[in-house]
Image (cartoon, rainbow, N blue to C red; front, side):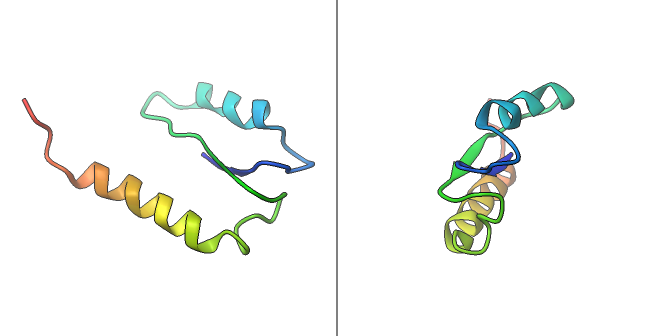
Amino acid sequence: MLTGASDPRVTLEQARARRKFTGGPFTFRSFPGGHFFLTPQQDAVTAAIAQDLASLARPATH
């Protein structure tokens, strides 16, 4: 879950509550900015998504 820390439409608590809609892993990340945080935070958002995808690609250790 990615959200803007100062989004006037969705509070951080409301965004975190979306965890209940998934049965799988849930990662919550907030970034500086409001509802349209993606544009000014493009590099940070891209890095966060790449990090999450890389962690999924790693083989599980047993």
